[in-house]
Length: 97
Image 1 (spheres, helix red, strand yellow):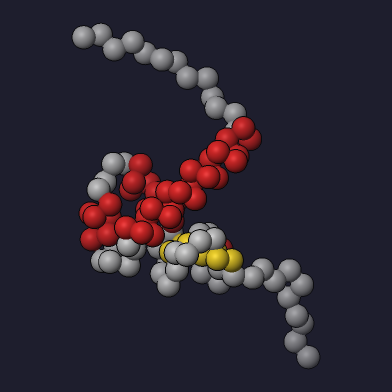
Image 2 (cartoon, rainbow, N blue to C red):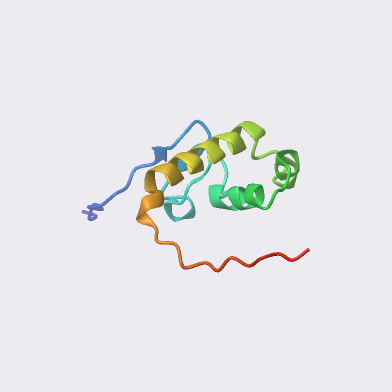
């Protein structure tokens, strides 16, 4: 008889479009039905790439509604966990005109 996994992790629906499945991308959040990492799309958003361009680059596998959900979830996670992170000391440089 085969041994059963003791710590089997289940698929989690994080939102309508975002899922974390241990069988896909090691459980990192992806867009449902794809192997596209939510973090990759959020990096594109942070870089200022237009959402329509992001949709085109992923050949329609990620919709603007899915991007909006990812941004909302990231914002919520930041609000809930920001205090857990210690930012390094930043030196603000003056910009001379």
